[in-house]
Length: 99
Image: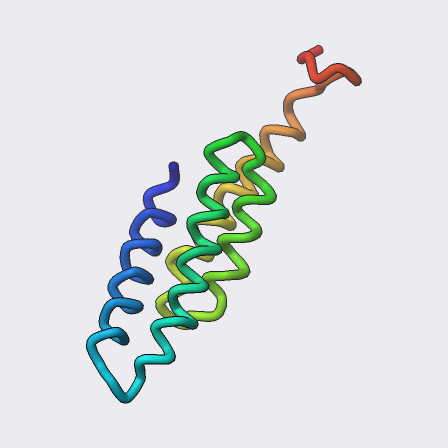
């Protein structure tokens, strides 16, 4: 797992918890909580093998928390670039085996 994704997730959780403590902005904890849920979904999809889709989910959900979300967006973009680079250099046949 990419370190930037983990750091971004922890920061997003801390932000959500800080809004819970403030009664005036309590509703923002739901917004940030939804972003955290999508971050977790993206990380789970990355762990289960579909790195590009999971990274895109994490990237889009992190974009809502600018400028803090840039940490996660950078890490997700790095995963997408690595997968493109790997798929460019590794040729596979129709059954998914390397040629």
